[in-house]
Length: 145
Image 1: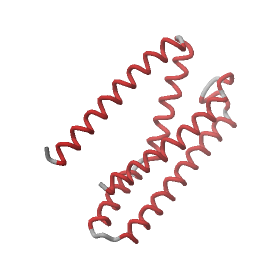
Image 2 (image 1 turned 180 degrees about the vertical axis):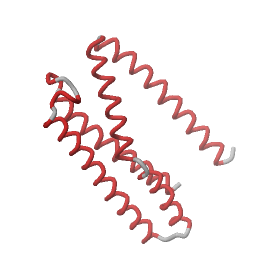
Image 3 (image 1 turned 90 degrees about the vertical axis):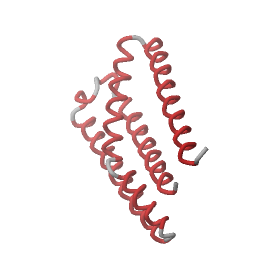
Image 4 (image 1 turned 90 degrees about the horizontal axis):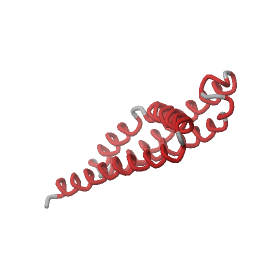
């Protein structure tokens, strides 16, 4: 089996397993939380998804492209410089998004979510920070493939 075919096979299995696991977990969460709490959960997941897209827009793809090019030329200094550059941009974008969410939550408390669930905003920001960092690292590692 060729390397490309083998990698495609493992990638497909991983994607389908992730979808199946997400489906199973969503069903369990919906049954456990009930209608009202599951609505809030779904809302927060969608908001987190939008914020993660905003923090990662172009960063992972840029890291993949430029690190792969530098790796093809075997330029380790360029790889380090590219990684540092994109990591800095990722950090600045994530901090800006978290600042904007915190600002909206403090100045307009009931715009994002009802006051009884305001504590979830902090959890939302933590999730965005960790997920965007994870997605950046995945992009960097794909650049090395």
